[in-house]
Length: 187
Image (cartoon, rainbow, N blue to C red):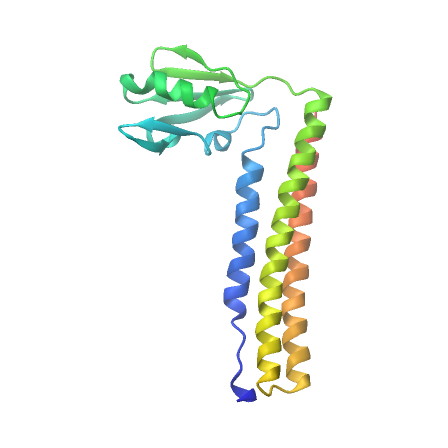
């Protein structure tokens, strides 16, 4: 029984990568004072009776560093898209120009930069927690196999492999956080 144990490290890695991908998505939604099409990704529009991502009702462009535009394809949806942007909590005031909605990105003040930096830290901590939960699941599988007769050497080997994966992912989260905070604090 003990020789048959094979920890699914690919599954653990996939779940840790999922936590990292989620972190990158959350970071993309943080406004840094620079225009980015990805900042509108979380915005959903009530179109045709269902909630639809904004990029499926119009074209999102970044024509200049402090401007995002949304070219709405269906004229009847312009008001709904504008309302969705206003209510999204992005703190951006949309301006209408026919079917084009312009979103000027205001300059961030020092206090708002610090706030966003803390929010980024919170997102990173959530990612670390998710990664540690995956680590705990892997360690629990190893302990169960030890109870079923796995040798102590095998147990140590698997535990060190899981710990190495975890350390690597935590380093990646820390590096991503450092990059994002530098981007936020850049004037």
